[in-house]
Image (cartoon, rainbow, N blue to C red; front, side):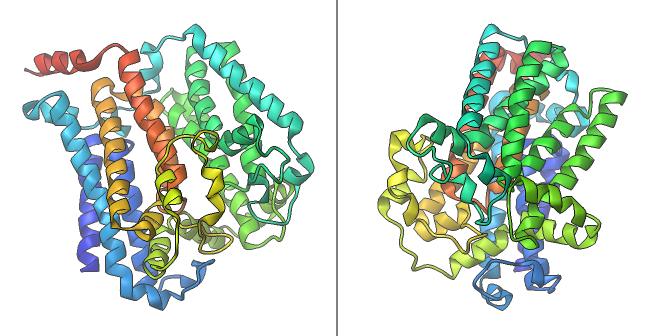
Length: 440
């Protein structure tokens, strides 16, 4: 049964890659689910490097009893991705002309897709405002703690940084999200060769990168990886830069993970010292692989911890896209649970612990997000795909290993971006009709 589900998930991924390209939202989501399931199967059934499964209460033998349930929950995500893509195509162009959309994604991905987007005055104001907020954050931040601290996740808490209950405290919680917003504007300004907007966005993005490093967050590497993907199709020189960024992203990824495995300190200093261990690339690569796709183990933990108590307010607000300043989530934040200091329960795991109705909400949110993103891709092609790619990669990197509340915010952002972009472009269904007529 487990092998059948693995094959089913792989088939869904192959179908989506062939249908819509490897970088499409649905394909990325299905691939992440399939790789997560594959890794779980390698450890539980084939006993491949189980020592890299760290931070969990149960030995891997206990995972064997729930492995089919884990596989089933992960495969559902891939099937939802297939359904979202199919419905998006049919709603835009009609069943008879779906074949002409085949290949959106990597095969027709061009950096020149930004050519039809015009820079507007509000972009300068918006990016400038974000940079001003980040400057204020840098003034009040405790740089001694950011440079070095001994308690994992300590500096992510605004209380530790002396910013609790202030606007900067909420900015501190969202600073990594701000980095992804600035990443999109930086890529756009870089292609448009606008020195002012690109400089502003780069300054803000660089600061967010430093904060991500201080957090020992994989987001630092994800910034570089996404930027490398975005500029890869920009010509020969751009490809060389992209390869360099990709290599730097890989080194950064190892460097932010090493303190969790080897060092006793965290922060910017630990990140810099970690480069001395990169020579152990084989062991580090295995650790990075199991760290990145450990969602199957997290789901297995949840299936074996059914009696954990969550207040109803915590459950409901976990699906709220609003900041704590508005919905009051801070009042119940401490009533959540973690597997260990290093391992939180992920979105799917929390939904399982909340109850079956919340699992339905979780899957509904995934489908709604994927359907909205795929409609954006079908309507506007690679223009939208380039802006949506950072969001969908970030969501999938956290889908099974980070709490629901973080994911719902990003899913809401993805839907909002899709809605705004398709209307900002002013093309809507007219594109679909023109393509339909052209194909006919």
